[in-house]
Length: 390
Image 1 (tube, rainbow, N blue to C red):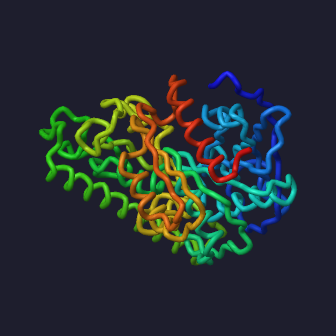
Image 2: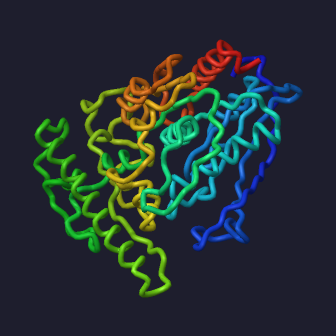
């Protein structure tokens, strides 16, 4: 960071709002007595007031431990890292509920804290979430969740600008790219097709993969996802029959990190490390308990992971966004596929929009002080040019 960096103080943030629910989704206090409780961390440079707040939010992560938010505060910005009701547990996560949480933070920032401007910033999985929120704030259109439950998105306050940073197009698209199509039997992941198993030495297809093999592999991934969606919808229909008081069910999904990009640098090439991923060794991560979409409720599957049902596709929501946009791609990103930032940028309805690439930056800026400084300088300069940072 530059020599003029500010000292940063942090404060725990708690906000709550009323929401009626007939079912408890998460373990703990959240949702008790008709209240949703949200927690976050606000970073502020010491003795430096601001009329603008930069708000980072992710569906399931709390971002205060990432380098960028604190570095932005050290550069003079007021920053909020906002956690949803599903913080650190995306098993029951319903994105339509998360944008209601998002709206509660934005309203609090303007009406309670008194910020005149709120810049909504989406990093990684927060990008498609932020696009979903901003689209519904500018042009509300949904009345139901992906599972058909009623949802109210009226009265959302739009962000005054949006940052799409190292972000993918949707959780569903990520899973479509990551899911292992070699699994033949969902209840026994040991039964697999060697031809579709990227990690099986018997698989005759090796990097660099042929275009025909990639097409076959991608179609097989999509087919597995859709088979799961059929099961989910059948189960949900059965639960809604009213024969029992059962309202939800949790499902386990085996092997969810078989992304050819992580093994083949010729696919959407960038500066990423080949044979590696944001979760470490891809073969090990493929069956790790921390894997993408490993555990999910029925409603969460439809909202987050079903490519045909999710309403949080960034490309669908981008045309509804009209505020200034800064889209940032990390050239060595080992999580987000290289084309996603450019595709979102092109689809965005904003007239004032800029795209930039941070050379050499990995997904987390891990061990990369220069690249971190580069992105902070880029972002603060963009904000100052729009009178969003004093």
